[in-house]
Image 1 (cartoon, one colour):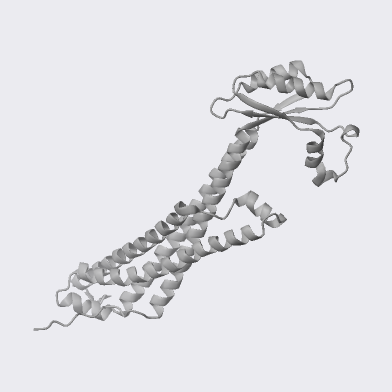
Image 2: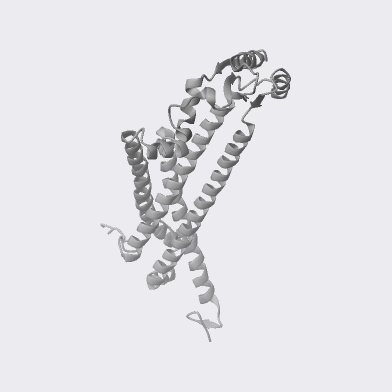
Length: 315
């Protein structure tokens, strides 16, 4: 005897399912966008921190009777005499003028301006020198000299990175919470619309797990489609942003975006994170639908077993 395959409890496609698919796609897109933005900002802050931590700056203010060239060489020699320093570079007048061009324009005569001169010293990140001792020796030998180890900037960058991660995590939690609530309402709506079918199946002996599995399959298909669409759009967004950035390089807008967010490139690990987010969203949606179905059926059983109620209404 040939057994006919059973049809699904829920229709494969309806208005509610299509609306839920769109909502899940939007949530997945926002989640992947947030994850990508946080990852880029963290990578950029880490790069800034590494670059700043590799160098210290000695600033020498001009003063009457001070031979600037000798003072610069002396400061460089003092700095390189400490364990943990690698090399030193005196920023010449031409380079100093270029640094000031955005504010004072070109064609500056550095000898007529009381502009401090700089010595940039590269240090060993794993074995840094004694900054306090270096600062004291520089102050004693060259009163016009001051040492900047960039600790303040490093602390600010670390604080910014941590704040960004916290904000991104908060946004992800809000997105997932909104998605879970949406799935709960959609599942209850589907149960309400097909309650007579569920009650008949339950009456003829269908177990709660069977009904839950049917709803779970239905919402798994919707969540996989929606999360795949949203995650794919997010990956496409970053890919297009990367292409636009590479074609508009050296423009002020692109330079500012690169300075803040770095390059819009993830590599394999970033796209793996987007794929993982898609899977998490699909599983979370499916689990939420299953638990909601089981909870609703339990409420139905509770009402039917209460002798003081008839069809859920007190007698």
